[in-house]
Image 1 (cartoon, one colour):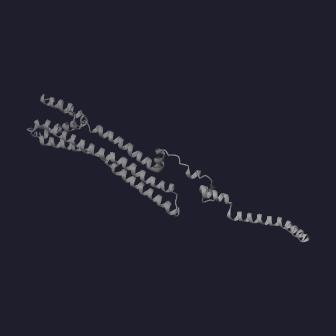
Image 2: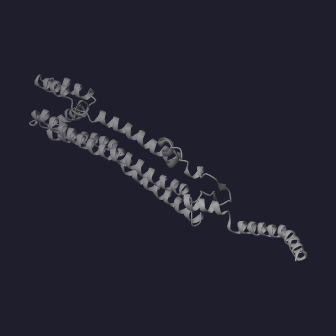
Image 3: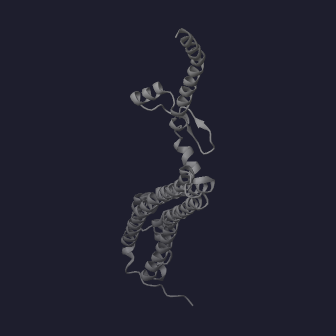
Length: 285
């Protein structure tokens, strides 16, 4: 019996290392297939671990810093310049400077002292009361106001009768009114032209954005689309910003000029009314 036990023990001793090796190999294969069990348990308890995300080129971003990092704020003037471009910027700048110049010129021309000064009315009436007709004519002729030009034209034709004097005054008044209206009309032109230029920029910016969509495939970059949309919106905004004050200033100044010219006509007729009985002088042969 003892002779049988000894060989059995020897066989078991020889087979034990191979059995342990096979068990270790089996455990390694299972770990390779299913992963580390403690780590899987930790993930199930604590939640999934953040994994690096690869971009289109296959480059992994471990912490997502590039996607989460906020962009730097852009200066408004720089953004406006980039959106408008040099061409639109120069056009709107020229329109703005011209509008301011015309507004100042028309404001100076639409004053009462320029069109119908009260000092001229008092001095002219005083000369007429003194029967100093030549002095009244010289004073009116040298005066640069519209009233002075109207009165001098009336006195110059008074020898041909009162009706001819009124006709001469009306002709000069209409001529001066046309000059003022002609200068004011440029402000109206800017008010009408500026939004049209803005609309042109709007159409150009939208075409640029749709071109990006057409050439960029199904997923164009938002930054490329924003460039054309910014051009469209900024040109419209600046065009309206120039046009609104231009139209408002034109209408205000036109009403003021019309009122002052009417006052010039009434004042000149009142001053010349004392010559209603003047008849045309006979022409000497």
